[in-house]
Amino acid sequence: MDYLLAPVFWVFGLLASIVWWIFVQILWIVLWLLLPLAILGFVALRVAERVLGQEKVRAWVKVRTQKYGSSASKRLQRLVFALGVLPIRVLFWFPIYAVWHSIVSLLWRPKWSPWQRAWAKRWKAAPKPR
Image (cartoon, rainbow, N blue to C red; front, side):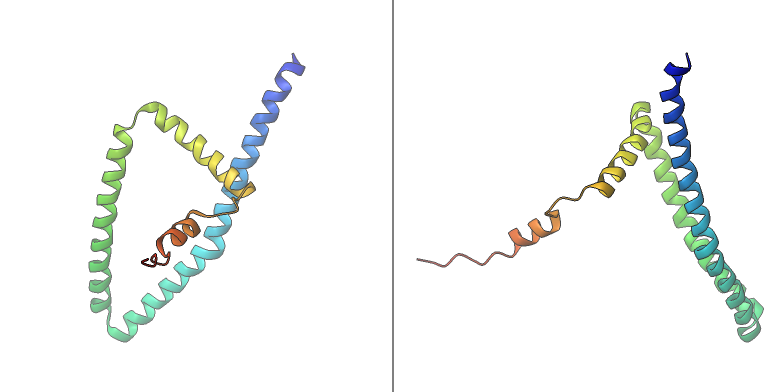
């Protein structure tokens, strides 16, 4: 029985290691990129409150927050609606195809790119009249 389940455990171990690698990469991105930006933003906010006045800065931040929050809310509503009308099989297979496409894109690149072909077809010299 161990011989039959060994490949299954190997595949689950491989998938678990891939998920763990993605989690660690996201953690490092948050730690080394987003956290310093958040600290810098907090310090800049405090400096602006001291220089320009607390009421002015908080009013400006409130206006921006409401603007970006409402647009993000509308986008999220559209996304949830789009996901709600998709068939279940599409929701199931989409992540699998996305991972497969990313693996193939990392391992293989075509010799031509669609942009090169489109550019070459767009900018051909006009044919000379006879």
